[in-house]
Image (tube, rainbow, N blue to C red; front, side):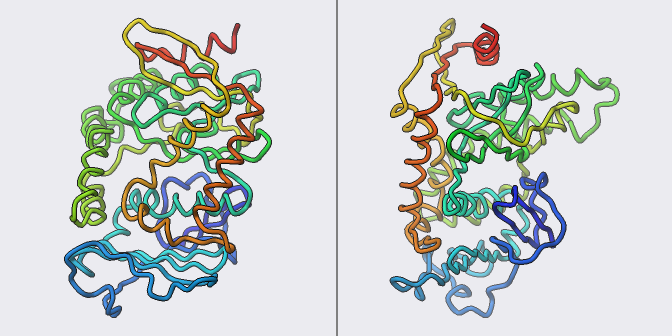
Length: 371
């Protein structure tokens, strides 16, 4: 068993070693908030049969009940991807079959992290899709951007300049303006590949560069797990295909290029908490354009929420979200609370859009804090 204690807010007990939660590994504890188990559904008549389409089963879901199960299965029955979510007030049990367990990335991204988002909300925190760093002078800030814009590249460059790292993809927020670290491994996309290699090779001799940091291997994996690859999967998800099974098998065969910040920059400083002063939205522009635009909290809220909702576009969460209820609050109630909390946060900090035609966001950020 593996145990993860996320800042004493949420505790996860898992039969699968979850790479994204490596930073939070802890000693054994009792009473976890999330329990992840691997099981077979071969004796479950609902799950064993072959089907003509994906199926979400909520037969035991009753109005007002705080304890219920949600099952998910696809065309191939027990030969495909299957899972079950057992909800009992604020305790969540997630059971996956052996096929899903072979892809730790799918298990975490498509099952654990969306549930974490709702549990954090139920406990008064927000798990926001954003990077978080702190300047050498201790000024905290967020970076937010659509997938594959250049956020991770910007984070790596800022850390090389001496900024402290809190997160690259998700940040825990406690009102009024505290950012709490969530330093999971980063996915190195195709356009980040060069920056990551440069950051690594500046510290090691090229002759010592081993297969674990193989340039060609990283580039191939990055291309497969790029925005183009995800867009293809989203299009497939609109069709009547066993999309969860396809995604699981694909990511088992070609593992996503996951690297911790210290795999890339050995001296990277990881900071537990920071007070947030500003949020920068990174935006691509035409070549030669460099523009800093201050925006109001309403505009910032829409951008921040849009960037956070990506996890819910991929099946089965587009359907599953309708049935999630934690401590008597529906997923929609919790997401409405999330909007209110994020708006309160944004109302107390400065929000900017950084437009760059040459991916020069790092220079713009450095100038902002040095001016």
